[in-house]
Length: 75
Image 1 (cartoon, rainbow, N blue to C red):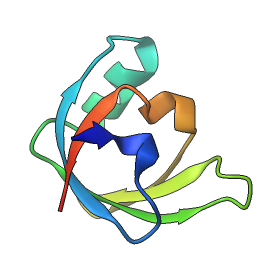
Image 2 (image 1 turned 90 degrees about the vertical axis):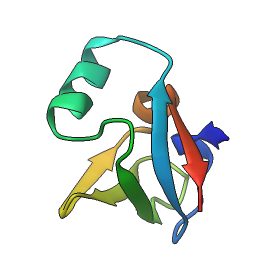
Image 3 (image 1 turned 135 degrees about the vertical axis):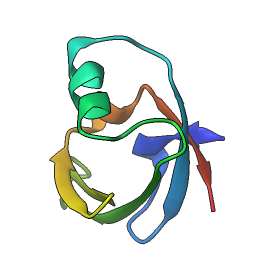
Image 4 (image 1 turned 120 degrees about the vertical axis):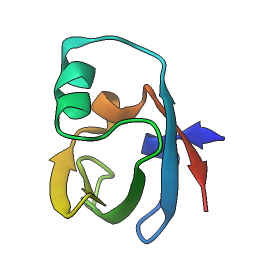
């Protein structure tokens, strides 16, 4: 298992757990990024931040530090 921020563009994974309860994690959970959700990293900015992820039909831009606390199981 690894952090969502460690995935490369094109990689998919399943969310396993959050390791923090920061306010931004609550927002991500309310948007449906919960354990069991399959996500794909669509692209990454040239310097590696932000990431564009796809899950449940949404395309979302997130900062690397916002998703460091999300543990995923890569496919």
